[in-house]
Image (cartoon, rainbow, N blue to C red; front, side):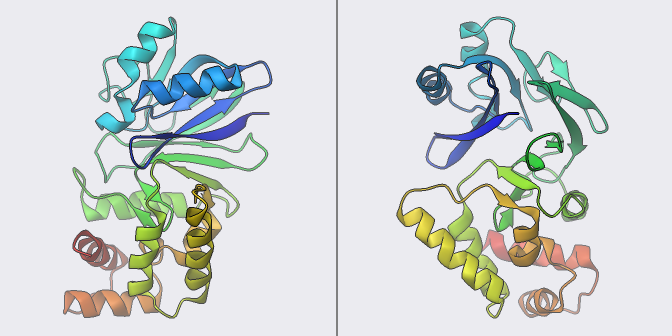
Length: 257
């Protein structure tokens, strides 16, 4: 069994640390080395590997320092994301970290090389999705198309409802404020916003969430809902009914919100 804990980095990043009872650890998307080293020391852990979801600096920036400080690290991720990656993976691959199996999912949109790691071998299924799916939102489209991101999110929607979503940023309050503009009458969303405000007032993480929570409150997973479709049409001021077009409209709306 593995323990999963967030390590805060920069102003709003989370580096996820996975560890086992033997004191071995993997980290996910380390943008900064110092917070990782402090966590390892505080928990008496030995870093043995890293999982990378995509190439942005706030997800790979610590790799030179970590590989220098911890020889023989396994660095697993998309081949093009960083020169330190020594176990390149792509969609359909299965990797083992800390005796736990992870399926590799291709989720382009935020970037073209973006992948996610999914496991059903923990106490509750877990998804490490980088900047593709956020609590209450999704990543900006820096490289991919709305159609690609919509398809990527559709893939994640099909995961078990109790899957924990370990995203890489504390964006939840801002995401839910936008979600409420899209669906002001969504009672589940209103309740979630209140709970997240309570957590953040105590400086506690609002993540992980679950796929079930996202399906109920995240407008980017709800392009099939009439309430989201109506809001998207109002924003775009044109008739749209394809789910990918609805998604594209609310993504443009969020970019300017």
